[in-house]
Length: 179
Image (cartoon, rainbow, N blue to C red; front, side, top):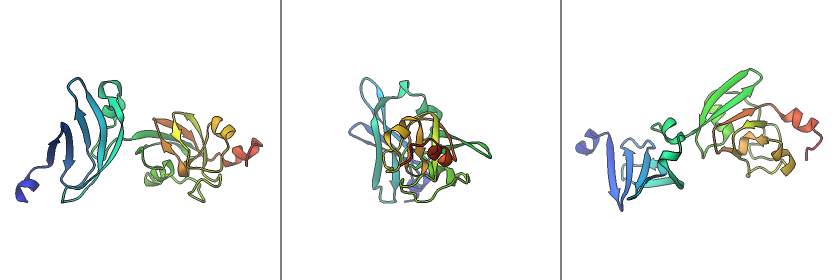
């Protein structure tokens, strides 16, 4: 065990898939090397002392064509930059692709309105200025409202770097298209 602890990284090569796992259990990037190109596959989300891995994977995307993987590489994984335009000012946070945007804001100390945390009310409504989010888990907004850029922060995931104007519940209801 001392030999293992002496090294900060453990590299495993199985079927040409290279995993890089921090021995403390932190998430690290791994990739698959193919004869013609390297592709990003995902990253390790959990590791215990017995080397059991739980993987979060994405589609195979060429590394050279996606600057985000290099710009946002850090020990805890890959993330998107989410800018919140709030009444108190603009704040930018990092959000993992599998983390709700509201949770990322709370971790960063941003106080945003919320109530149900299940996508069934409009307390946490925001409006997307640019970028892409996955808001399919909510049940409150209709297709017209979503096409206008409204989202519920408690149930949406970032799918790109994005800018979101918060505190939009009153505007959502004032538009006359609330459910």
